[in-house]
Length: 278
Image (cartoon, rainbow, N blue to C red; front, side, top):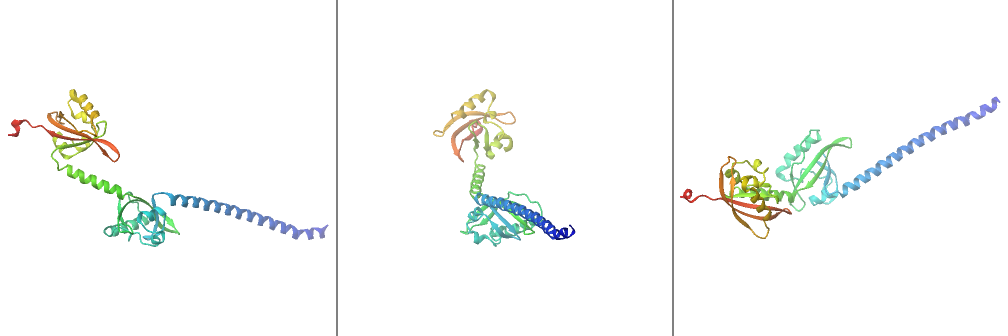
C-alpha cells in the first residue's frame, strides 16, 4: 500500500493546484464581470450625457480634456477643435483673467457659488452667455473641474431689454402698473411708489383693489375682469395712499401679452384740482 500512496501523491498535488487555479479563474471571471458591468454603466452615462441639452466639459489646468456634443454646439465648435484647447481663451477677453482665477480656486478645492453668467466667444465670434455649475473632481489621479452649463444668451437679451424698459418707465411721470389677470400687482415704476408712498417690495405684494377705498374695491375688481386685449379701458378712480389720504386719478388699462402670458398694463395719472394748477 505504501508504494500506491507514493504514486498518488503527485496527482493529489496536481488536483489541489488545479483547485486553486479554478478559484483564481473564478475570481478573475467575477472581476471581469464587474468590469464589464462598470463599462456598461459608463457607456450608459456617456450615452445620456451626449444626448442632454446642457453643455458638459471636463477641464484640467484650464485645458478642456473632454466635452459633450451640446457643449460643442453651444460654442459652435467641432469636438476636435475644442479638445486640448484653453477654456479661458474661449471666454470673452475682458473676463479671461477673472475666469482663470476662478478655475484655479475650484481645482484647488475652494467652494465658489455657482450660477454666475459668463460671456464666451463662439467660433462665429458671437457672444454666448452661459450659466455654469462647476465641481471639483479627480481625473487621471489629479484634480480637475467638471462643468455643466446652459446657454442663456436669449434670456440675457430679454432680461437686458426688460431692465432697459424699466429704467425708461422710471423716467415717466405717469404711474405705470403691471397686473396679472387677477389684479395682483407684478411691477410698478418709480412714480407709483412716489405717489402712493409704498416701497416696490410692499406694493408688489398687493392686489390693485387694495389701493382703492373699501367701498370701491368691488368696482375695481370688476374693471380688472373687464380689461380687454382689443380695446383700451378708460375711467376715473380713487386711490388711497399708504398714509390714508386719497387722490382722484384717471386710469387707462389694456391687456397685453408678455412672454406668452396675459397681463394688464395700467397707466395712472393724478387729477389735480384746477385751483391747484394755478
